[in-house]
Length: 220
Image (cartoon, rainbow, N blue to C red; front, side, top):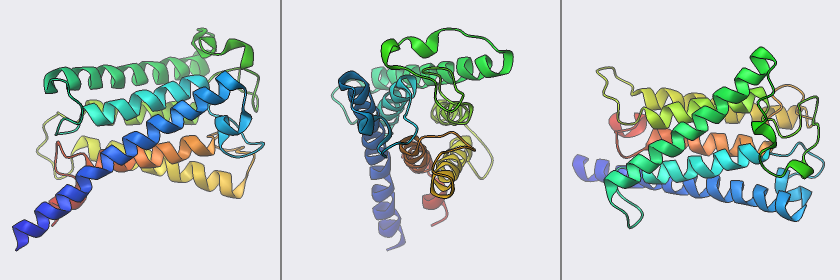
């Protein structure tokens, strides 16, 4: 009975990454469509609110793909080894964008990566240069990518590194959402509300990844 209950719970948690990946991809695609068609509501999901940047949208799409491809069970009709390699590649790209963006803030650089997409549609937002992902979301993207890249790492500790990164991503999403609720101008974290939602669901996906027993399933 205990084994059957545990197996049923694991199947439920196995569905979380699929749903989270879909939400992340759809959110990113809607933002891209918003820039492409010049529809502001698609960029932010909330009227007169800070928009997700184009690179942020690209990161959301890559993160969703990575979550799908790095699952324990293949969800697309490609060889598992190829899928996992592409998934890691997507995660590495997210990490690269996050680190390069943070370096622009730390060292005052202008690497030009912020204006690679939809250059003519970009404007300054709350003191942040056109197209640049704010520092807090950039850090959260780094956390998520590290969690995805750590999926296959072994550990002798009670908690897997991916679970730690997943919890931090969820925390980032909750803080961003709380910031939006208390200060609609997003003056503290500068995280768009649609980005906060993506961070939260991706954090849930990292905690529930079926390729390693998550926090919840292991304690049953």
